[in-house]
Amino acid sequence: MPRDATSELNQNLLILSESEVLNLEKTKKICFVTNEYMPVSAGGIGMLVEQAVSALSESDDIQITVILLGSESFVDAVKFHGSEHYAGVEFVGVRDMLDSLLAEMVLPKWAFSFETYYLSYLVGEYLLRREQKDAFDVIEFPDYKGFGYVTLKHKRLAGAFQHTHLVVRVHGATRIWNQIDGVDVHSRERLQLYQM
Image 1 (cartoon, rainbow, N blue to C red):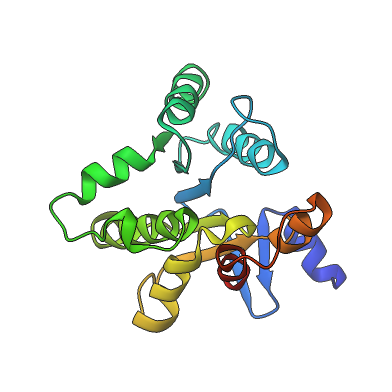
Image 2: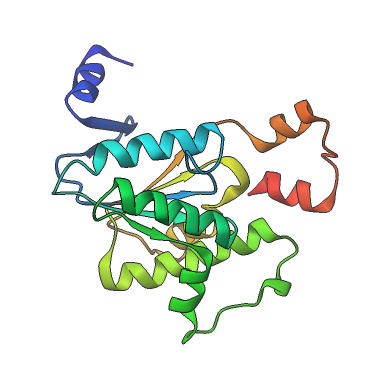
């Protein structure tokens, strides 16, 4: 990274690519999508998101939303933790997304070959509806499990999220972790997940 970019990064500028710079001073609405959140669940993604929420929530100028992809007990535990530690942070679970989309046509879970693709679809549809009412400046996804796949397709193919920066933070490819853990990397579900 050139010295100029390094000094800008240290002045609250996040370098997204050589051609795109996001000024955090102008960023007012940030959304994190995650299936982990410390201290409720272990994992590097959850630790990173929790630390980012903790730091950003200290600013009165930034609105933070965290979309939680996990069981209802996980979502409830994170919401409880959040209510005690972060005033004004919005936590949205799968049930919340489904409830907000009920009036709209949403494909059922059985229409998808595996759950991760369904979750990516729900997130994409929820964010698409939300964009029409109250767009985020930044939406950050982990690369893990392809949770941002449908949202990125909405932007790339349908022109949605024109004023929103979609960020995919690289934590490590699922395929590599599966190979290390000895998971069958040739199942239909796994091969489709790797393409997301």
